[in-house]
Image (tube, rainbow, N blue to C red; front, side, top):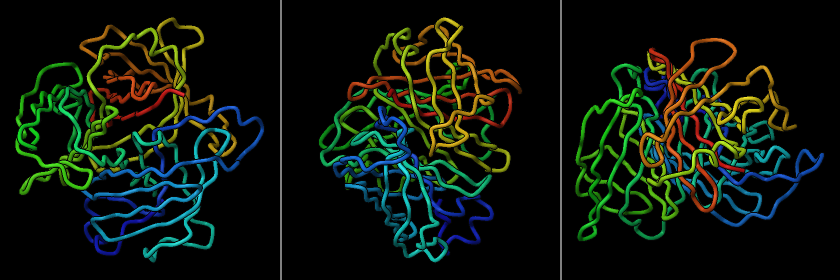
Length: 363
């Protein structure tokens, strides 16, 4: 977990950005068959990612052969480290160099990663209730193509389940090198909230942006779509629009993260999670957290049940999430097969200001 830089110490108290060290989690390559090993070195190519985190910081990441570098472009902070592969499929790293005076380089600056190489990367910042999600996509070296995408909201301060946008669709068109985004937004019950045309965006250095606009968009040729709407406006994460076989989707095993957010005060918390077919309910899934990612130990007290209805639209699924305590929550899930594996991005909420995002990838 990396703390925020000195340049925003005063702002951080209001915007509740991040504190402590960086703890990285990326959607990803689920490594199985590790036996009883707790860690090992694993061959790894070099992959680069770019993404955002509230209140609008741009982050760049590069993972190599057991090495990782990260740069907060907005604040001018860099971090370097090494990593090994855990039996859980997550990667465990340690910070070895940084220009951030608040991050130790004595071996105690530990972070974790879970990567889907050359597709998508999630970043889990730390610091108790200021643990706010960073979402990254593979840094595209060539301009992405036009297409249709589904996405879920990463909520902002003031978000509520009754009135705010929970998910949406977008049609991307390209003309003379400029990108237009025809967006439709919905609340978590599926009611249309509005339509917006974002026009005239250029592709530069792996991102789509426009002078005078706070919106930043990152797309990959494989089908990931995500971005940041600007300071205090939240973000979004999604995948290409395609019809999926729901029975096949719920039959798979997944790993990823869940981000719980209190939009009344901006506090957040991110945890590694897994999910798989429910052992006793047909067509449902069971999700869980971990008591230890290092030893791949599941927290059985954290089990939740995800029930799904019909496919509302191409790759958009409604359902509910129920745990051992608390209210049953409505959820929306967007799903597509990317590079041969399902990526699922979801949002769930009761009638309150405490939504959860979860993004998982098929093992």
